[in-house]
Image (cartoon, rainbow over the protein chains, first blue to last red):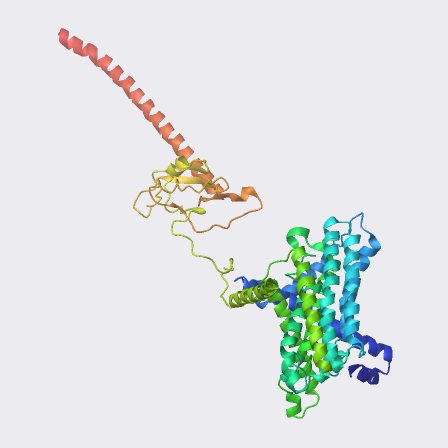
Length: 356
Length: 200
């Protein structure tokens, strides 16, 4: 584990803790720089446009330029803002989404905190985001912000239920909430992934496949709603609410919200990939194993983990530029009348199969 | 119950159809034209910024008169007989110094009416359409090839020539008048003689 090797290297636990805690942050920052450009490029090409082309080769430095612009911007705060909440909210939102990274295993050698309640912790920590969003909306003293944050809260709270039901189903099969153990279980080849019925062989593996595909669709849809992405972006709904709860924010505080949104996107994708697609496990076995190079394996795992994460982020973008925004009633219908009953039936079936 | 599953089916299938369409468009070449680098070919008879080829201009003022918004301002000075201004490309002899040929392109309405009457085809529309300026005065284009001093000089030359000519004319008139007087004198002197002769 990296934390232990840091302790050995520096002989100081606090320093090692800080260093290993800052590693996901660097990962997020690099990922956001990449993902913002990627999103703009994907959206552009889906609409037969080119996207940013000016800064660097094919606009690869566009996000760096945007970041520099955001840093230079004035930090505007309206007179009637609730100053304390207004300033705390972006930090809280980012903290909430960053906290989720603590329990995500990036490789077999790196996990921020190898706790047994990993999945439970992630679900709990990402609920902190709701508080931040509500704070931002309330403190802005702006009707659009407040409307946006209330919609966000309603949406996130109701879509947490199908997520939890699916996670419960996974826990029934695997018997663990620890994401690291969950990833280790799916080692070997891609047919050991939970979406293909998990690592055990037998008749239940085949029965599990359709149920797992249904669970995957449910958790992916509801996680899409939890990160407020289109088609579930009614909290931000540009055409109705300017830009929702971060309307009043500018400069670096706005950038914090932006960072949190993209960090959340990756966190959700990472969770989906850990739950169903083997986490950091390679689908085809490791090159390091065949070449007998033990040090290569963590790098390969990091590659597979980011590749899977980015793929699901790409699917999120793909959906965003395909589907129009749902109405509030449609949003609630989709959750309460479709996702939750199906998730319940799914949970029931999986429970019966695991008992038998 | 049937409707419920029907709804799920339509939702999923339409989402997948939509995703298929957008995925296809991911590989369709972009229609964007990166404007300052890549430019569309302009239509053949496009009307943009005016240009005057002063080598061919004979200073006939026809364009200025044709202009409906009077954005062309021309001043000419006659050349001296000793000066040779050359010929235009279609063989017209130039006789005027064009001391001022200003086009206020900010006023121009791009009607092309100035281009049509030009006898030497020296004023025409170019394909330049990007000429925004921060100061409106910069949009007054001066086409005269003569510098200010030169045109002053030409004006002075012509004025002097005029003066000279006037003086000559005066002198000639004087001379003529003198001659006339002399003639008259002469005739008065000779007249009595003839009268005398006649009397004789």
